[in-house]
Amino acid sequence: MYNNMFKKDDAAHNFEELESVAGGEEAETIIAAGVRVDGNFNSRGNVMIEGIVKGSIKTDKDLTIGEKAKIFAAVSATNVYIAGEAQGNIKATGRLELSPTARIFGDVEVKTLVVAPGAVLNGKCAMIGVEVPAEEGDKESNRNKNGKEKE
Amino acid sequence: MEKKKNSEKSPSRIVSSSLRELHERAQSSLKEKAVKPAAAALIRPKPIRISLKEAASGGAPIKRVSAKPNPAAVRVTGPVYSYIYDTFVQEMKYVKLIRELENRLVDLGISGRTHRLSCFKNLREIVKEDAARGVKTIVVLGNDETLIRAVDAAGETDAVLGMIPFGTEKENRLAKILGLGFGTLSCDILSARLLQKIDLGLVNGHYFLTNIDIPAADFFVNCDDKYKLSFLKSADIRICNFLGWQEGGEEKLISNPSDGLLETVAYAKSAGFLDGMKNLFKEDTNVKKLSVFYNKKIEVVGEAPFAAWVDGRKVLNKKLEITVVPAKLKIIVGRGRQI
Image (cartoon, rainbow over all chains, first blue to last red; front, side, top):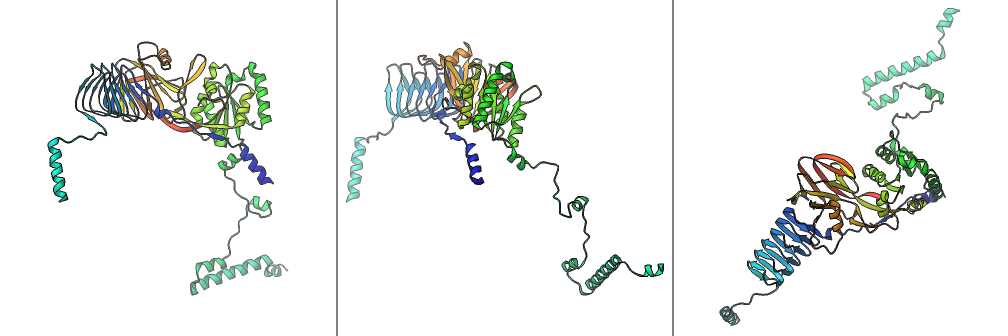
């Protein structure tokens, strides 16, 4: 009887613990004008840049580089929208969109590319997921090689 | 007759002489036969010492009690709840309300030990003492400021922190975010026992709940040991763990205290800091003036000592090491909470 009584008493002082909702890592990071970032900047959420960044930028989501922004960094993101200046290689696993004011000095690796008239792109451009077609001469030599191998 | 008396041995003397003989025989046999020491101990008579207290208790052995109290014993006997009244709560205008609250707490079966703060009673010490006594729930009666003061001490203990708000809604913004009601409703919320684990910030070894405000000065910010923030113009910085913002009478939250991250908000000076904070919620503004970063570890390093306001308290330092301690504080919340 006494045991039951104490058990009841203990239960009365127990708390119902609530689960915490973690969503901060996916929130939007903003680098405003007048702010300079030096180093390797990694994020899981969207990133918006209006200031200066030197080093590297990596995000799992979208990256927006504003008109007044200056980037001296290697960039890796899903979708990238550029209106400012970017010096460094850019890799976008989704879409890269260049506005008329965009100025890019570096190689670009994208799945989908959208370039507005007036945008500057100085560098190599490679499309992700597209095989490079071989030249005609190379094709013939490949066929001959394959034929010999079959014989 | 006297010679006869002397020659006749008393029974006590006979016993002592026989014991002595036995002892001598045992000694000689030990030397001769090299009897094992354990056997010798059996033969050798042991001196019996009885203290006065034992003699008084009929020879029963008495346990010696050390001067220091056993902490485990103290923990078991302590009350489960403790209530700390802030100084302003003890004013005459709250007497009736406190009586109602105390009656309600008794009805709900959650009454406990009470402390009334004064200039001689420190909130920090009371919280630590109660936690050491085994008090499981420490409830502060006061406003946001009281809660913030209690957090610094409660962060170092395992106790659950509760609050009964007093004063105006403006003075109890945290209470509103936590979903705590006013008056006897707050007692019902305490009794409902909904518990939320929230993060605490740690700055130079001290816990903080809400935010750190650093006015513009000559400093830079190291974030997570990965990148450095510097400012072309002077900028105000706010490092947030738990911050609400009011807009149109509604409480808006920009920092979630249970995400395991601190928010660094920087505002390059051109207008007021508060205007910048308001702009953060305006969706139509294209140009963002506020910078927002999410970090677990932040270092603010200045060329010279700079002023910072930690939970509203001024601190002067050359370097601030700030980290987040996830799910450090257990706090009682209501159903209408915003976190």
